[in-house]
Length: 251
Ligand SMILES: CC(=O)[C@@H](O)[C@H](O)COP(=O)(O)O
Ligand SMILES: NCC(=O)COP(=O)(O)O
Image (cartoon, rainbow, N blue to C red; front, top):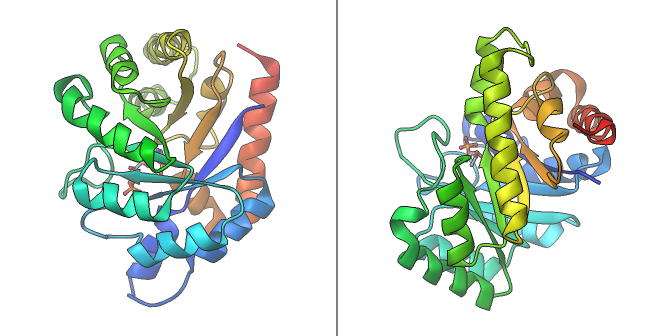
């Protein structure tokens, strides 16, 4: 069964707009759980623009579903992860000036260093995922550093889908879906778990949820945006329904 990891970064974005205590990401995690989320994702950024260290600590303590900590592969973050022990840590590239993550991690270019990071996380009992572009050489590098999971960056697909007026049959969209699909096949052939995420929403999620062997989607901005109008529990429930409908139908 396909799983949904709900990214609650932007609940914290709203709180940080006033540097106050509400809305509380821990409360959001409970609501997401009740809506059918299989996991919670947070990105503890170096600049702490949304999620704070204390949020991750409280989420670790209170969340009863899997916790996925997105982080840069720095000594500071590895130390935090090893102390808090989320079920999964996902290594992502990070830039202070980006609005959100702009591309996949270049695993190939820093294999030696990342292999050491994966080993340190594994020693603490943490599964490592890497957020990568849908490129075969990045998938192969991920396997060589010992990553157990690859999350394929669906931003280029989402961009093409939007640019094509949400026409999933357009050539540009089909090309992007095929790229994600081929990357997924390679991930599975190398014995890793195939996840996907970034910029997925209620309109574009189904072609990705339908891909063979995709195990988990991580979705944040669209769910938190909808929750302003429907409440988080309902926003999660609807996303899960769309994913299950698509996964049940197959590709
Ligand atoms: C890695 C990824 O695709 C997103 O989860 C992103 O890193 C979330 O971070 P922001 O919420 O700061 O955009
Ligand atoms: N790793 C992707 C994620 O957690 C959510 O990304 P988005 O839906 O906020 O773009």
